[in-house]
Image (cartoon, rainbow, N blue to C red):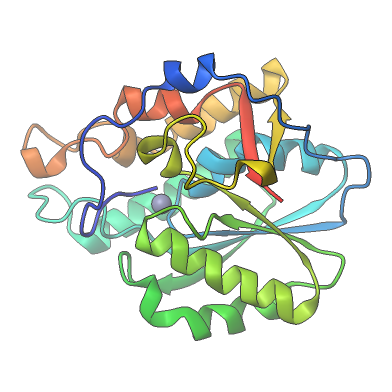
Length: 249
Ligand SMILES: [Zn+2]
């Protein structure tokens, strides 16, 4: 998630209650013929959990092997922090990501680290395509952040993953993260006709909550210093911990 480097979003954004009250009745995302392999290309450690953590659990239960491509290590979430250097922050976030996957019951998941600079993924798209492509076959489902999410890293990651999927002939599924902040229900800038719902069973919702709790550097302040403020305060988390996930097919 990591609004981070450049902090492109301000204010509290659209409240979770506005999304909860909206009932657009999208079709359910079809899991009747799950793939053997899923590759999740996530710009920052936490985007894989916040966007599709529950869906990954369901796919894993259906027999899919999950691979996470960690595009950045999230070193840019607290610029100017007096508490953690960017390098220390990255070390924390890598450990948090493994703990979070473990909390989802996905502790065996392979995590490929691209190590790209947080906030500057757009300068490295060809290299990211080359890293993702060999992980994908025509039968793989590729999940990534929506190319219209309005966070530069999320959009660049989405473009690179889309190109890798297109080259191989794999299915691409995008998921919004920051759109829940800046968009509003029925927003014409969002491709709602492509939206599909993933209803999460209660145990999966609870596992997703535990996974999010692993991201301490994001959900709690590093200190009382303004530069150490939480990137994901409770109103932000409420939007992303609703009982339904949404993907764009
Ligand atoms: Zn992110």
